[in-house]
Length: 276
Image 1 (cartoon, rainbow, N blue to C red):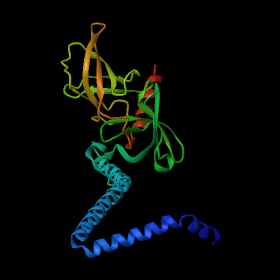
Image 2: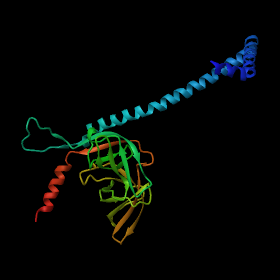
Image 3: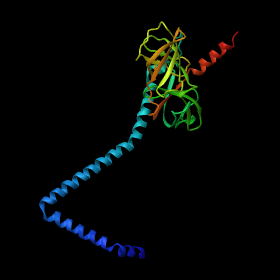
Image 4: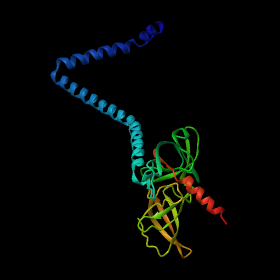
């Protein structure tokens, strides 16, 4: 209380001025119709702008929830696509069998950390084993491929980014089906390199490069990017510079793809390699 009294004593001239000024403005706007109209117009205009700003801020803050819902809905739609299933052909089908055997399961996740300025970049997701995510699962965005899950904890996953010199996958030219390994050389956050395409294959700038489906991690047909330029290397094969479709500097929501056939494929291939 003593401090409050001291404050009023120290600033009594300012407080008195504000009281008189407020009273003067009140008399001005209430006794003069023109000023009164202008005052109400200004006050309504200001309150309208404040309302718009508040509504925009509310909409912006709600974007996180909306994007999360959209990501989860995309995962549900992916899980219902025919490309997530394979056809089972057999002479005898048990009543419990299905002619459509699920091949992939899609899980939504958010990016909580992402690097793009290193030679070995990683992405951290907000889901781990508790969310059904495990190593060697493919990661995509709405734009295209993102990477492969390398390690997981209960609640987080570390993803080997496409922008990592250890990353490699099989890609193919969409228009003719020729395929080869795709890797990142560490020079550009927007480009990867496709090699081992024979020199007789007809290619052109702008051709679409997609995942081949080989390796059992990425399903076939997901966007990698488009041909930016190419050159012959060694005289027989093209070295193709591919512009990535995914903007890794603006990556927030992803889909994690679990291949239900990968373990079986790996087991068969490992057995084949052991055979004399």
